[in-house]
Length: 118
Image (cartoon, rainbow, N blue to C red; front, side, top):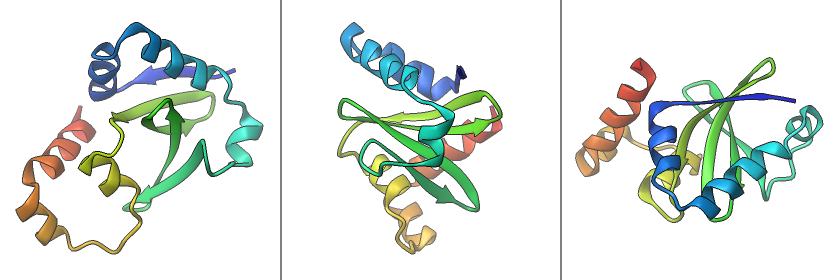
């Protein structure tokens, strides 16, 4: 069994959802096991890497939850809406030119960096 903690961003996103969507997210986490984290199914549970940091991606309804695992603690970093630019950038795995992306969406990168400082 895991202990689940939330970043400020993920808590705000969770609180902004209706109750059924909140329950769907908690249900998705309730079904995670150490075994499922080792044997990723790719459709519901996968991984992404950013700057050498590994995060898991869990789909709950249409939302994507990006979280880190430290021992028995799951730390939900981001809850992102489906089909959003933010979600695409996090999961794209494409070699991206950050200067170009900053010109297109500077607030996104500032936002991600501010979350790391909290």
